Picture 1: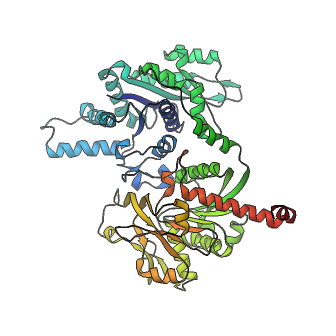
Picture 2 (picture 1 turned 90 degrees about the vertical axis):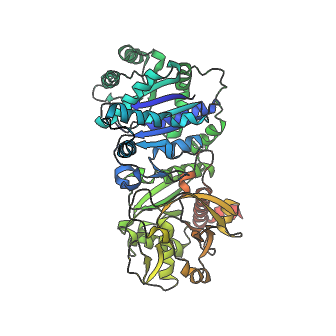
Picture 3 (picture 1 turned 120 degrees about the vertical axis):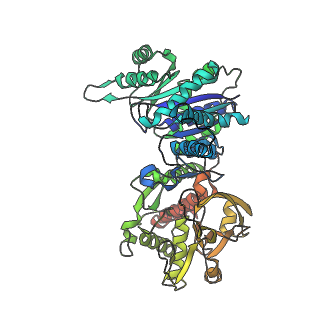
Length: 549
């Protein structure tokens, strides 16, 4: 049987339960423990797949095609493991399952209630991964905040598991806030006391209290929290704001969060944590040798979480190239043919981001054209690749009506068209082309140089594809398909060999980038942008040019 750690949150949302859960998991993994993390979300949506990015941030996609919460991205980036459909469960999925069973007659006519039927299903799913026999510890993050109505069934399920399982098999970590009142120059513990009291009233008592704070906690404050929240002083953990989320595991190591949990779970004879690669990454991240600017052309830039995996991939690839990546957000809705040069001036590279719908499309096309004509390193992801195809069709092939049928069903030149199997689908949720698919890479291409392999696998989330009827026209005029699906012939990668760096991919490489294994496409894109930046410096400084020569 696996052991279970539950991470709850209080006082306010967005404190970073996912980062604390991932950091604890990283420390246990570094000690040789087989660990995984799962997220239970209280909202009634079945999954985030139909949610607007402004509502919930990005929709993270797993290898097996699950549309999940973005926190699963943190889990994978920290641990370099793959999560699955079972790692993210919502209230909607729980109720849907229970109601379907009721309709089948599985409850033999009994009245279906929150307790025991809903809580039993929550518990079943909480224990499901642990019963596979692959993991020593399963960390479960409970979404929302203690006291929320929608969180109550999940907290009740944790209470029942604390009662049902052996004491050494369950630990509860509660993340809370210690606000700093600047006028009084004082940290306040009362919100934490109320949060723990509220959790205790549900029957769940925390073993560890992690205190998110802007200022250091002194020993007196820790003793006060321990006294009023009924935990040991050493179980009060300081979680100071950090410059980067990747410093949090080392901060938690210093605070001995992993040791406290190990003692509670009776995990003994574990080795000292091996974090050399992690520390090497942090050194490169904190001490870059140069700086580059990358334009992120998107339509949801007001909410950074909408492009969370892309931004984290920039960090991984930047560290690999020993450069600081300064991301310049450019809203595609405000780019025109007239102002595009001004908007993109000074950039070292351009990434056109994924998205859905017609809003901001013209701006993305204008940005692609600027990058293509000016030798600016370009990288398009999903919709970004499709915009590159449309731009090339219009301005190089002369197909002025070229478009995607997603934005214009009446276009006379549907260079991007809906996939055949998608045309029969009516339900929106969970029906896109999702998850990992193989891709054959053409030798001698930029894509082959990047991956160093003729066979790769990447994750997808789309309904529209390159129209292969136009393939010959594109390749004759200089844009080639360097990657295709071996089973369907679906174009996965388009590139322009004559350009310094111009590549678009139908899949989402950002979803597989991690600290220890940065996505190759991002690494090479940042490398190209670095080279572009160095070229600009050489042109501006003849003395530097002569030194290089």
